[in-house]
Length: 111
Length: 118
Image 1 (cartoon, chains in turn orange, green):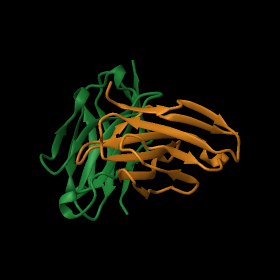
Image 2 (cartoon, chains in turn red, green):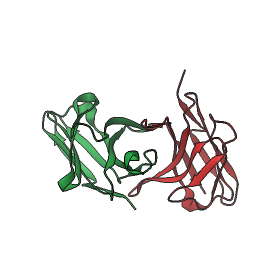
Image 3 (cartoon, chains in turn red, green):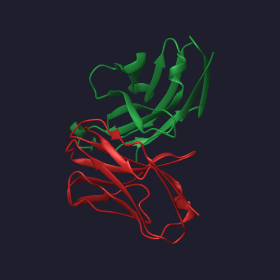
Image 4 (cartoon, chains in turn orange, red):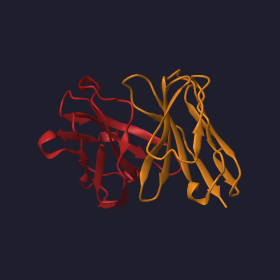
């Protein structure tokens, strides 16, 4: 089925560990995005990508790394997780001029 | 930098009553405007979008929004609330690509939680 999938749906990790959140879309959309959602802050853009091998920082990029070697995948890595990175992470994609399509999110808890 | 303000983090209405969710934006160029809805444990879904055509935009599930440039507003309305409308609603803005902006990066408001009472 066409769509955008995120994995895992839930993740618990310890402070200092590296963790990677996966995002895969089947529409061949050019643009992909990572947002984090926190109570009282709405959604904040972490990183985005306009095409394979092209990525750029959003509003809150510190502590995160992204890559986009293939159009359909856009993994987000927390190199050394901190408690402040406990959040719900959403991946989204869009075609040129189109609306964002969101995945169902990954709920990350850093202990 | 653009910003979006949603007035009221929580709105409560009775079933059958008018729904009004407020959104104001600040933008130096005419923007594209969006309303998204989020149901529990799900991602956001597009309700409607304004892209400089008609100022009154109709969306899914009976929702509509009116773009008022003089008031920099894009309020969301529905004449009669249904229990299934209970969710969190997000207003978002992007720049108008016809004015040299980027239309694919959205700035979101903090959201308004809508509860519908029987």
